[in-house]
Length: 327
Length: 195
Image (cartoon, rainbow over all chains, first blue to last red; front, side):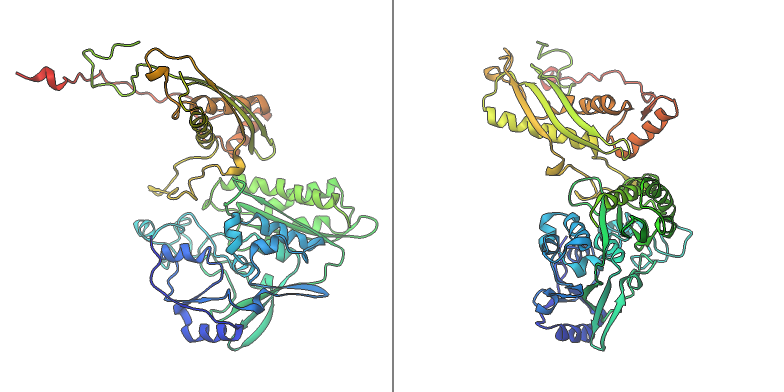
């Protein structure tokens, strides 16, 4: 499979990139590391005659500490994994970054790319010929979902490892376009639709991840996958809690990745933790309840029943890890 | 050694003047909550007849161990709607360097009279015992048997669930498929059919 021909544009400033994006519209795609875009171009899952490269834009590679932490979306995953500013609860973001794909991919892939990472499905992520043999699918523009043929929506799964952690840390993102910019809570960026999973407008560029002050939060991330490298998450568990001096949990956020078209909270589990001692019993109850928030579909590796069962195991382990950690 | 010439010449695949033999021991960890298996060490002794290039023969043996682990733990052709799902090396899971255990190789030289300089094979033969060794090590670790490959985490959990309910802790096919072998076809060699 070959890359189709394209024009490559290399803006030096964010404003220039936004202008190019506005000019070329749906003909253009943004590329930073390109680790997901290029395979998708080869398989004709994405069609773009113009690629707008973001690697040359210095503004996207900056980090600012301002009470909290703001990280430019151009930060490479390998840099995030070893980032000196990602300590305390923010270290969960570094850990998640270090678990993404493989070292080579992390050398190229970026924060922005992973936060916006396309959804995946076993009926979609194949060559053009394979998809056509099946008659196409909803994510590819047809009107049938091959996983749930009676349905009216796409069930492709979110596969970002950073999104669940960023959500657990209550992050926002700065989106920039030719028309201006806005600060959006990250939770509002994801949609429950495998074929249109972002609330980011086509002309918008995700410029920065904004993390609020850490404030006594403890956070961690666990990833379920078959092999020790390369694979996308079959389940991602991001957990963040705040404990007071007596060890009572005052705040809890549990975010599950790879069980739906968007990262999902586990509100029943969170409520079982808040207002009581953060001990083994609380953790066990929360882990049990978290599995109810997960309805994995049969469109990736390992059975949905197994992945749902692992929610309880992984949430339990993540919360136990937080309980053993320092305040 | 079996006769090389005879009435069934040309109708066999695999007969050889000499056969190699391999023994393997696998040490692994299994997490009973997740069913995930981590292979820690493999000891493999392979009867190569004579190791003409020992470094290569060891490399072949270690490579065979790698192939066996892949087959035992994760490699599988899966299908969706009649189409092959595992269409790339991404979907068809082979172990990475991180899954590869320490391998201790012993080359056993029996100097086989039928082999060139006494040598036999060191191609994929060492693969064969590693797969059942993995299955047996799993049984030793958590007390369940998986009767098919790949031995995936969900199969291990299903077997463990059965055992926890007091049933036989086993997962996989229950019977060999019913299959009757046809009578061998006798093919004349070219020399035999000349008028």
